[in-house]
Image (cartoon, rainbow, N blue to C red):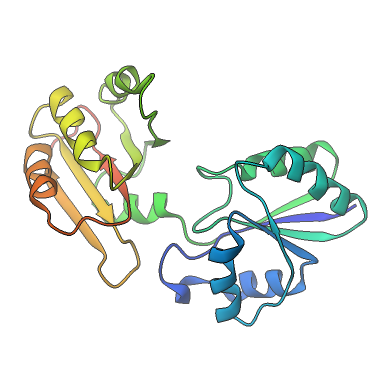
Amino acid sequence: MGTLYLVATPIGNLADFSKRSVDTLMTADAIACEDTRTSSRLLRHYGIETPMIPFHQHNEHRKVAMLMERLESGQQIALISDAGTPGVSDPGFLAAREAHRKGHTVCAIPGPSAVLVALTASGLPCDRFLFEGFLPVKKGRSGRLDSLVELESTVILFESVHRIRRLMDELSERCEGQRMVAVCRELTKQFEEIIRGPLDTVREKITAHTNLKGEFVVILAGKNYVE
């Protein structure tokens, strides 16, 4: 039987990659990754020459079967995402689930996660939270937002640069203007920015921002949270 390693990769700052993670990728028989072009930059930086296998949302079911064949032969396969922890907003859980079903060893190598970096840096309650990830672009989006803003726990959302202003408008329509929120971007990078405050204030700053780039993590305080 084989071993499937789920290896968290840096979300921005390459120095966040642990020695254990590097050693795991170096000794694996193959590395399954979302985008070989993106992953190759990380591997080159650390001198890792292990062969890569494309594994992304367009071919995950076919590739899962191929990964299981490799595990059946006793190989060690490392699974990484473009950035962060595999299985969070990517199809990595499919491989982990199938590996468990077939009796292989599944080992997660801890490391960077945009979810936890943003949550802990937000200064909003961390004891109870819901990670929603990316909302539907169209169908189901409005209803899901209606439900999320009623929760008393902290809510974590991912959003793209193309829809972050829209999301701020949608939240403003559903929440009182004083609901606390933190919008995080470029986490762990040189121009990391966390815009925190009452929703209306943050919305105005996002609307007026002249240099919005990258993907965003939005931390929304629970319904009854008061500072």
